[in-house]
Length: 362
Image 1: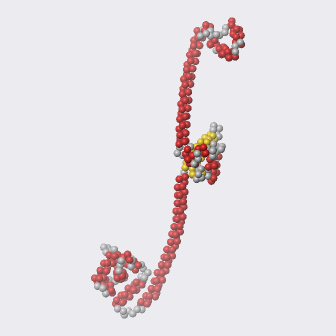
Image 2 (image 1 turned 90 degrees about the vertical axis):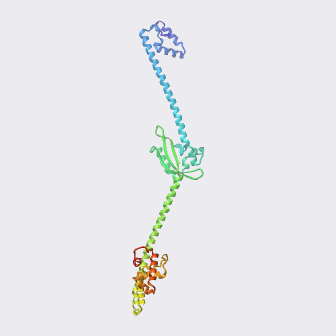
Image 3 (image 1 turned 120 degrees about the vertical axis):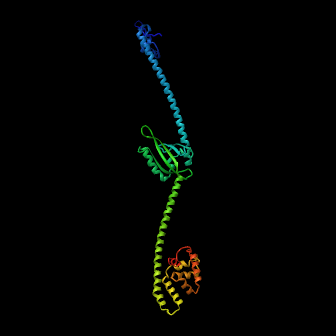
């Protein structure tokens, strides 16, 4: 290696030659001058200087090799980062475009759709190109614009990072769709809003079911109120009937005790024994005129004959079988057969209870 460092005897010649060079050549000449070791003749260097220069060159070589390795590593990292970024963007686009719910990116100033996915286009009934030309407030139901704009302005003012609400959109065909809206903002480094990310889920069927449930509850409450009113009216009617029944009972009792029984007492006591028995039975029945015994005994479901019903009345009044047979002019055996039939029809033929006690308890 030849190093052309100017010596004292030829310095003036070097300077003269330098100023005669073109500008680019002057620059290269200057660079050589600025590095003494690169322009110094090896013959002019001492051994120590050469060793120092060699060590320095070796350090530079090692340093350059390290930098080269680092540069390759950084370049590989950058390539991996770019690849991961591309994959992430591809994955995000796939999620965005094929998502099961409507997704959109909107501009904060114009409130326009910047990017929309296919599901959102299907929800609103517009093509992608049509939707990107329409500000989202124009598709919002008039009654739902104010609360949405209020929350949107809070995001722009930095008072919140997003919001959630339910609102109605008007589809292209004019029909109404209920949407559950979730909004988040993406901010610039200075804090201003760059984009708005919106997620829109169709809840129309849910709202219809909810409205139907509310209507059903309202109908049930109305029917409940009507039933309570009818129950109150029925209760008042039953009370009125009970009052009337008691009044009828009092009237009948008063008539029997005050009018009929005194007349029966005046009937001649010289009647026959059977006449007196019938008279006693008549008095007993008149006293029990308001009881429900006759109604129950004559119930068609029991299928009692008139004779059996009469015998039931006599048994209840305390008459024995012999007394009944004499009064009805029947044999004792016939009366007993009637008693057995009565017990069967009343369902007590196998029970250990007297017929008189049973009839008196009715």
